[in-house]
Image (cartoon, rainbow, N blue to C red; front, side, top):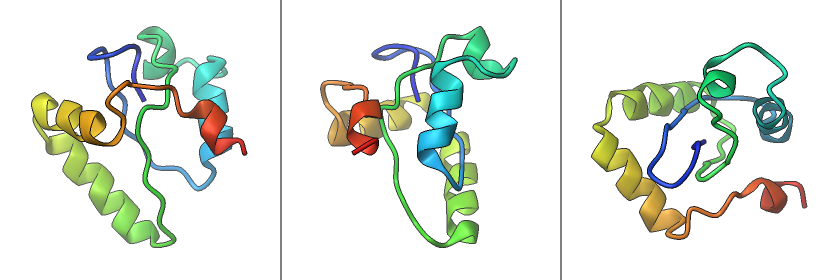
Length: 88
């Protein structure tokens, strides 16, 4: 998730993407995403393997910011908020 193009980024794992993005977008909890207004879903990946998801999250959190921005640019060059897309 991102606050804006090239803005603050948030990386997380969830078992319910729609619910979790809704919570972030609506600031339902006092959290990093509320504090920094991180409300746009700009990249996501799906898997049924929980261990793989957790390992990928750890890996991405260690990445340099430049690499994260490049990943988003490759999959979502316009930094479109994918919220509407995942609700279908």
